[in-house]
Length: 228
Ligand SMILES: NC(=O)c1ccc[n+]([C@@H]2O[C@H](COP(=O)([O-])OP(=O)(O)OC[C@H]3O[C@@H](n4cnc5c(N)ncnc54)[C@H](OP(=O)(O)O)[C@@H]3O)[C@@H](O)[C@H]2O)c1
Image 1: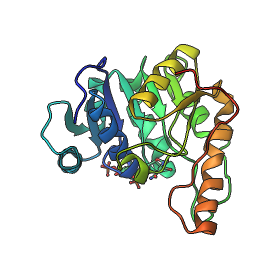
Image 2: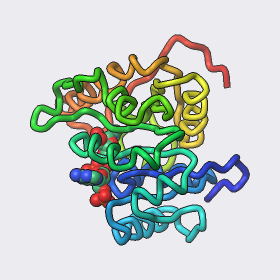
Image 3: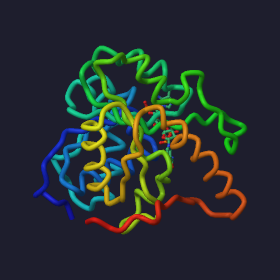
């Protein structure tokens, strides 16, 4: 069931046709946000909209599909969920459209075949690389790197917290609200320099998945009383 009561943001997901993008779209539309699934191909975006609509169980005007650039132009908050190899070229192509926006970067610097080894980019992290490409007039915030798409596409509580770090406390607070709307517990993990930890953790979690024959190992912050 879609919650129509919340403050509605328009969220554009670059590469939203993939596994993680569809998971986030599903959760945010259910929370009442307007989501535009972006793709390099308009037709592929429509197909992803059909898939997420099926999961939602009913048609909704809150969900549509566009080419990536149109999705970014039409949104207030952009999200990028493309493989790491596509991160730089995609952002360079969308730089003008992203001017002045908040970008939630979900990309992990996974460099196959060594997916269980932390391999950070020269800039320090994917988020810092994005910030360098997009310049000071864009707020890049990391989130959702440690959440498997399988968990996002299932209903119910996700046994994993979300660390949010990036440029500007106000931008992080906006993202923390969206984490909450996605049904997850988020934590302000500080400035963009801390992204190395958040992004690096994913390789550790993939290693644990392999060792323990599971699909969605996650993390929890403990020792802080619940303030909700
Ligand atoms: N999957 C997870 O559970 C998970 C969890 C946490 C973080 N992440 C991170 O989230 C990102 C997306 O993961 P995913 O599993 O959703 O990836 P994916 O399904 O492999 O790809 C996502 C989308 O990226 C676009 N894409 C692929 N190659 C591209 C290229 N060369 N240039 C431009 N766009 C390209 C495609 O969209 P179009 O063809 O429609 O343009 C594709 O549907 C990755 O960086 C991953 O590390 C994933």
